[in-house]
Image (cartoon, rainbow, N blue to C red; front, side, top):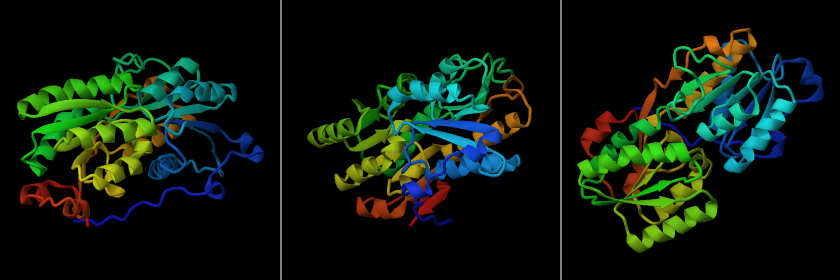
Amino acid sequence: MKRRQVITLIGGAAAWPLATHAQQAMPVVGLLTPQSRESIGPFLDAFRRGLAETGHVEGQNVAIEYRLSHGRFDRLADMAADLVRRQVNVLAAPGGSVTALAAMAATKTIPIVFGVAEDPVKLGLVASLARPGGNATGINYLTAEVAAKRLGLLRDLVPGAARIAVLVNPANTANTASTLADIEPAARGLGLQIEVHNASTSQEIDTAFAAFLRGRPDVLFVGPDAFFAVRRVQLVHLATRNAIPATYPIREFVDVGGLMSYGASVTDGYRQVGVYVGRILKGTKPADLPVMQAAKFEFVLNQQTAKLLGIDVPPMLLARADEMIE
C-alpha cells in the first residue's frame, strides 16, 4: 500500500515560468487550461514530463506560453485567440470540452492537442478516434462514463445512504449532460433519491452547500469538471467541515483531504497530452495521431478523512483501493 503526501502546489510569482524574449527562437507551445496557478501544480508537472519523453525541455529547446483562466470558462475563447495571434506552434488544451472547443474555434490550422471527458467525435473535435482527420487530436479521459461506478463505490462506503446530492457545473454543458445521463439511472438502480445542485462560481459552491445543510443529503457526488478541480480545496473543506461523505472524480481531491475518488488519471492525461505535443513538434501531423483513451484509472481513499467522518472502511473496499492515504 502506497502512502502519498499532499502535493505542494505552485506558489508565488517567482516560481512561475514565463516564455522570455530569448526563447522565441525555440518552438512555442500554448498551454490553455481552466486551471489556476495554485491548482495546476501536479498537472503541469505531468505535462512537462510528457514533453520530456519526446526530448523537449522547457527553457532549453521549447518555450511555453501559459493561459490559465482560473476556472473562468468565459475567458477561454479570448485566451485561445490570443495564443493563435502569437502563432504558437502547437496549442495544448487538456482542460476539458469547453477548453478544447475554444481552441478549435480559434484556429483550423495550428495543431491542437486536447483532453476531454466526453466523446470527441460527438463534440465535433475529430472525424473519428482512429483517424482524427483535421488539426486536432488528444485524449479522452472517459471521466463522465465512470459516474455509475463512482456512485456504486460511494454506496459501498456508506451503505445506509438513501439521498444523494449531485453537484454539477451548468457552464460545462456537455460534461454535465453526460454525467447526469449516467448517474440518474445508476441512482435509481441503487434505490437512491437524487437531487441536483448547480455551481459555476465559488460563491455558488457556498450556496450549494448551504442548500445541502438545509436538506441534509446522506452523501455528495461531485461531478467531473475543471472548475471543480480548481476549487477542490474549497469543496473538500466544506464537505469535511459539514460532515458530508463525498466522492470526487479525480485523486487530486483526495490528496487535499477528500474522502474518496474514482476515475481516469487526469494527471496522466496531461502527461499524454505533453507526449503528443512533443511528437507534433517533431513533425507528426495531428491527423496521423489517433485519439487516445485513458488507460489508467484510480480508486483512492483517504483513511484520515474516513475516521474524521466516523466511517469504517469495509475490508472489501480496502482491498479494491489502488491507494489509501493515511
